Length: 159
Image (cartoon, rainbow, N blue to C red; front, side):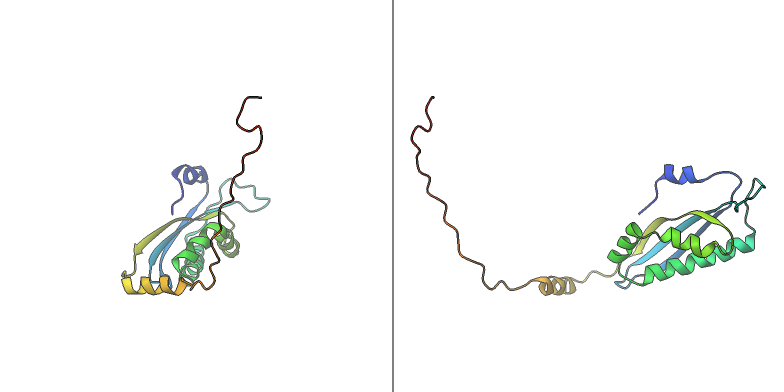
């Protein structure tokens, strides 16, 4: 998964700080994924100053909150649930809400997810999954016979 270049370029502006973080985490089914997050500072309400740069200590604190949230997200389920969570849930909004106590944040996104390592493929385990999903069909029903067509009077000719 990746954020498109034009979306990323539309977010970047002058006179604000960019905060990026990444974290490696192992899902419950054995995949190792690397999550990349990006956020931007925003001016406070009623701010007169044109710039909204964060200090380096504030950036470190925000980055630490980003990594903790992304680690919890990546390690709590398997790869399928992680993808569903990334697509449906507003993870960036949760990170922005938590990090705004340090400095006001806007446009926080998980911009990229890389699969670093796949688990070892085991054929017997795959067959166990498929056998567990199969159900023995008890009553399957009886075959249905096609209806016999009858000729109607006046069918098939010119009117």
